[in-house]
Figure 1 (cartoon, rainbow, N blue to C red):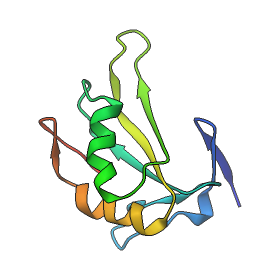
Figure 2: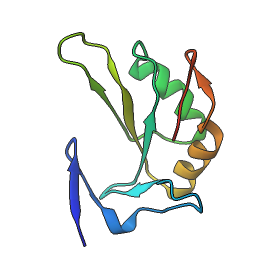
Figure 3: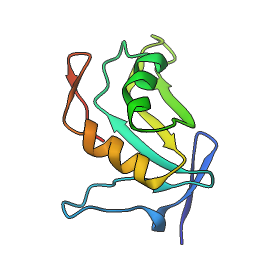
Length: 106
């Protein structure tokens, strides 16, 4: 059982749900379920993501990786929901959609 830490969130890699295509859906963290969002526009803000993913449930934590040199988003974010069902709804509702002129993957 391997453990990894992402931005102070400990999760168990064996608890990751995998769909039929082999893509990771949501990883169980100590306090909830983490959804990894990729393909973000570099000008996306936490507020933008809160508005988008807040429609699917309570966003407990939102972490965006920023380029230290430019201050822009590096293209991905970690979004934590308290319930697995909320994370699954967010994935199904946003995967492959256009957000700020870019297609995001969850």
